[in-house]
Image 1: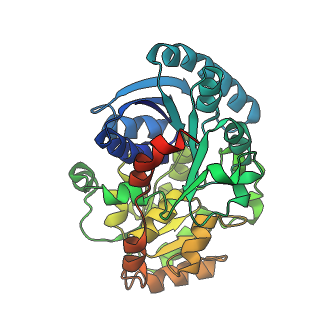
Image 2: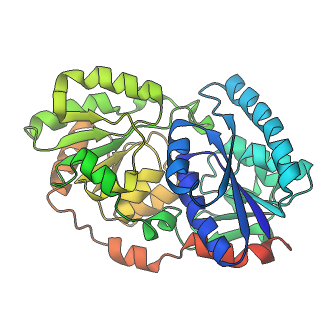
Length: 358
């Protein structure tokens, strides 16, 4: 079977790289389309292009609704010719509106993957057009059925999405050498995904932002730990470099796309405002704090309930919790949690043929 995979974000490149590997082992032919975005393109160069045909189609629409709409429409038109010519038997995406619409219009069954039911817009645009949905078991089916997909078409795997690439990850020696990752002397910070459609109406005035707690952390730890910020967008790079320029080497703002999991493995802890790297850090046993505003997504709440993600709400709590946790990077519950989880990539590859017959 010939399968088209559409990957829009860095997380999707990592996830679908593992899924594609398992699909190939099951005898399927794979090709990818990706969207032009800083981290997506960088990771596609590293993981996908050496193994698969990869088409670059369209661009990221940015942080406003009109830009997102126009970019999606233009990208859909760009996909039509490629998909008409390639004639795949199935399409798979992480609720990509472009892929779902084009696949539906060309009579190709679309299979969705998602662990973000809070992403209302893309769920509404894709799930009614999808043959089935793959999702982690901890997300109740009624969180999905409200978008127009029946319970019988929701396939649940007993694992969190980062398990896919954590199981397949090798330390990136180039990253280790470039950044001198040898002493665990830094805390990794991942800013909020502020331009995602589900964050556009977020009240950031209540958010404990990076610039509020980092200076106190550096001061109270006497510079024992550096803070390494991995921005998502170009404007975040510019902003944080400006804010923290006076702190010299105590605050490092990464400008290039990096192997985030290698960075995490050599770190002493992690503070996240989103989902993916928060899950990664927790699953590999790093002290992990979430400062995400609003309701925690099911996957993060699950890890918090298991005691391997801590939610904090004040500058004092961030600094004190970090100082306490980095003293001991062995976190109770991490190893059995990893062991008990299913590999989502294997589950998808082993069941996709049956799912297409639903």
